[in-house]
Image (tube, rainbow, N blue to C red; front, side, top):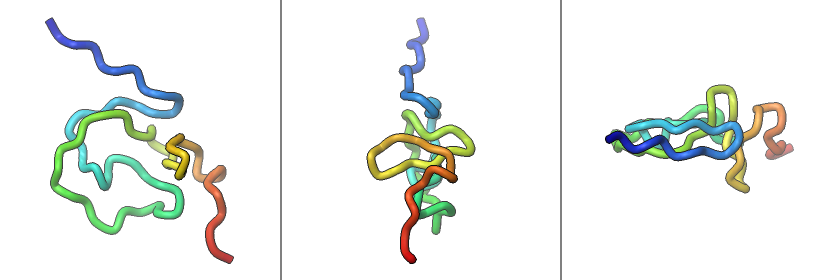
Length: 68
């Protein structure tokens, strides 16, 4: 029997074997500098969403502004 995919929080999706540094975008770091060759599985922000410091995934327009 196959094990069901874990339920992910809002705006996240379960991914299998993706680069931990490129599996999702982060606020303040919209484009990853480089992708690692590791294989991480888990809940990542859906396409079009960015990880905020508090751990949730939001649209880019809701990312906190950084710098001046």
